[in-house]
Length: 532
Image (cartoon, rainbow, N blue to C red):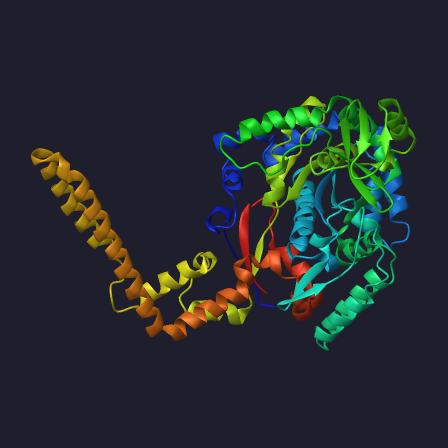
């Protein structure tokens, strides 16, 4: 494949928040809310910090649990080696996490894991005396099934209709035959389409739960690169987290620390997540409900379950698997059980991680490096030619649709559609009138200001009417601009947030993932535009 790869700054896309832009630029308002920055020097410091804080006994439990979780998988030699290496004190992980979206969900599922794979390789080059393992953390304990129960394929929504209660990872996949029928009808007849049919069948129709299906699928796609897949819904792993759950139940440490951070962070940025007094759920079959502390006892929300403190702590010791961290406690759970250096996520994830540094410090767990995952716009050769024919630059294609059309119509029009000079002249004239009224009769100032506003509004109206007329004149070009942008930004959103990997796998097949791995640099911290 002839390939084109270029990048633009995340900040220039218009799709990333102010807090993410400030983080990438290491601006002063955000600097107190993260630890080491994702560059080689930052990783050097992080390795030193984590090496002093991670216990060898934890490694033994981690390795044992991973071997048990993956015993039904056909693991690559590299993944087996990576799991074994986790016993060694010079082995570290770089981790990304994702929900158990049907058939991987949005395209960025790939980019998260590729970021982890490539970061592990880059760190090995720079620190050859250590080992670095890419990890995918499956969000098996989430309970928002509606959010993960569909994916988009060629503009169609493929929906799994099911009533799921409790942790989504435990949901049965027995009724996914109907969904497969929808996919089968849409897919083409080439070998790549056949491979996608096999992937879905083997993942979802030959495994009993959503956890098992997702683990199989991720291993099929990335096993050759040594990806280690972990399920936190595990009694052995949760036994390692027991002391932190105990502190949360008794002292509500996360609520106190995150609340203080939110107050400081909220001065400059919107707050992503607000803490609960207890940031834990009670987990059982078909049940995942908040643990509440009321009237001196612990209650399980929406149930009749009530525990004294002694009873709940006894349950924690005997059945730690019944305690499930929420969005603010899960990062701590991850960092306690993994020799982790870095968490890789999207902008929304990074924003709530930035709320947690003080909490981590309070419970004496090293805060990981935060890395904004790779983002990609895949543009095929025909689409790139269309952009060139319309004189749309790579940066311009990210503009909001109305802004892009307005810009291009102004460029091709034989009329001057920009009334900026007229506005300046009008404002200068009214400035003179205001000065005159101040010297003669100040009671006229209000009338002058009102007339200025009226005249400026009139200019705005005329400019809009003229632009509208020119859009009609160049409607064919406007239509072409609209079409190409809708192809690349479905629903006027980033492609990676809407499309599913299968749409591109059907075209590029087994070359897709190796191509992306070869072209993406996780530490460049820029948005990639790739034409396979």
